[in-house]
Image 1 (cartoon, rainbow, N blue to C red):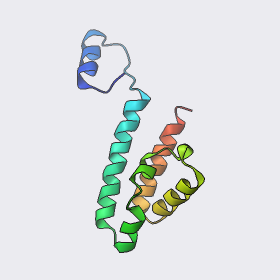
Image 2 (image 1 turned 135 degrees about the horizontal axis):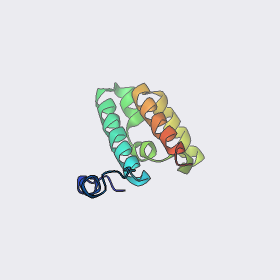
Image 3 (image 1 turned 135 degrees about the vertical axis):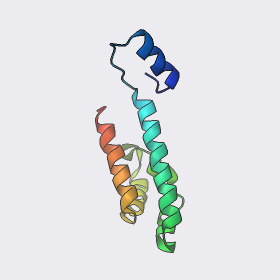
Length: 101
């Protein structure tokens, strides 16, 4: 179901024994928001070289790896190589995507 507090409260009140399962879209939306925060923070902290590696790659970082073309995946790989925290977050996101496959 949707991650809205209203939906969750209604289910907990009227169907207390029913397990709640959130849908993929809303979970991935939350993950991407978190990754974007990490990207912005890392870009602010980066030196000039690291800043250039991340600059202009927001779309690539928020896109699933399977949906990227060869040139885009190469650019993403270079951006992630230069930033370990962002690389870890992105890898975790991709692993989470595997749950639905």
